[in-house]
Length: 95
Image 1 (cartoon, rainbow, N blue to C red):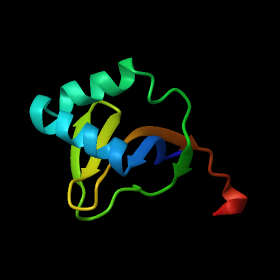
Image 2 (tube, rainbow, N blue to C red):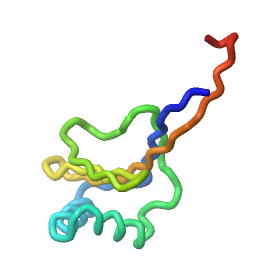
Image 3 (cartoon, rainbow, N blue to C red):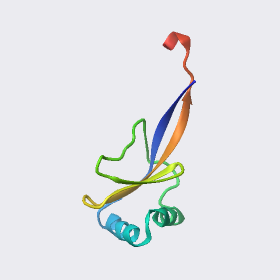
């Protein structure tokens, strides 16, 4: 078995709505912002899944367990990604 990571985008917002959340983040901090986004139902079902981390080099990141709050105040967006470990079976004839 081989383990790799799967990145699930749970939410991504930009524009005016993101600006409001970025102000909240600045005032309340990353952990509280993650809690509030969850309480308000901003994510239930993954929107997209990736084999590589979907955040950019200039994004600021906050890690909380399996969740990553990623945001960029200069561009004006905020998102939440869940990181899952996935096990793949590797068969001899596939090597």
